[in-house]
Length: 422
Ligand SMILES: Cc1ncc(COP(=O)(O)O)c(C=O)c1O
Image 1 (cartoon, rainbow, N blue to C red):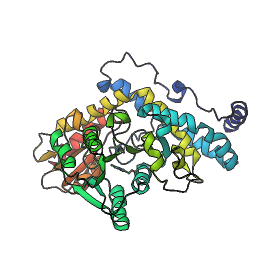
Image 2 (spheres, protein in one colour):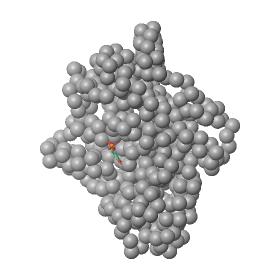
Image 3 (cartoon, rainbow, N blue to C red):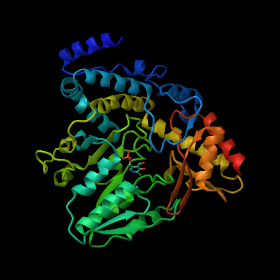
């Protein structure tokens, strides 16, 4: 089979000047039809979601509820990755640069379409760390310039800012938060009250990874802009989870990982920079024109895996086939499903809001008198349920993150596991 595919590649590549491998969506995702427009109440339609599950190689025995860490790729993406790797291994420089790389611009357009952005504002890279570090290290600041950030931001970004503090003498102004919160005014003020005439940028994590709290990025970014302050959104957990477009956030810079809820190959990410700001951000790695206004200056990574980047297209297809809104509703539904069943158990505390506006896929719970690590260990040892224990600032609990391939049966097992521990 491989040799016939290989000759197919050679011929189509020669004819079309591109790998043109992509099968149509229906054959890449058997059982899923592109037309689900008539499907009402999809969030609780278990038949539909069982078909979605078949698009993944989800373990039939272990229940993976740590999709907040990294998500599995669909089978079609895995196949494409394997195929592109084999193809590239035949003659890497030929297949990677002359064939696979020709799909970069269509991929950029497809990602931009999901993000509601101009493709010229989208850079494809390896993860959220790379996206956000590019901005953090790429902006010019003077000693004494202030950056407002929260104690609940992700460590890789906190450490990047701390490095700038040490190296360039900028001042970090920390926001502390009482979480979970459903109080927009409180959350906005927690940031805005820290702004001074020296503030240059506010760093906002759209969905906080420790507990799933959603922050009102738009309100904070608008308040910042009104004072001439720029904003950077960490969208690692919100992209392809919450149903939004980047312009809805009103921020200037944005970054995500695509191996989280877009379910891309591991080691894929995306950065967005408002068009007029691209020029002033220095690239993290060398570029022929570092002050260029072309977003592609950030993609000068040297030799890396093109198969990983290009196999991403299949994950994009599956995301579009499910639909951003439908996927988001299902993730809300799954979170509410298990959380509402455990919330009144004795000793159980929810560290995540149940409300639509303030959370989505991620839920965090604790049990009085029990360490998060012990709870997570017991869930795995007794029930083969994989979760993650969180101890960060004031948040101490177990984080549970289902995905579109998670069934309500899986969550019933989780609920029984928690019931057994209280
Ligand atoms: C909020 C947040 N930002 C950024 C990252 C970094 O993502 P990556 O390791 O894919 O770069 C993570 C990882 O979990 C995260 O939770």
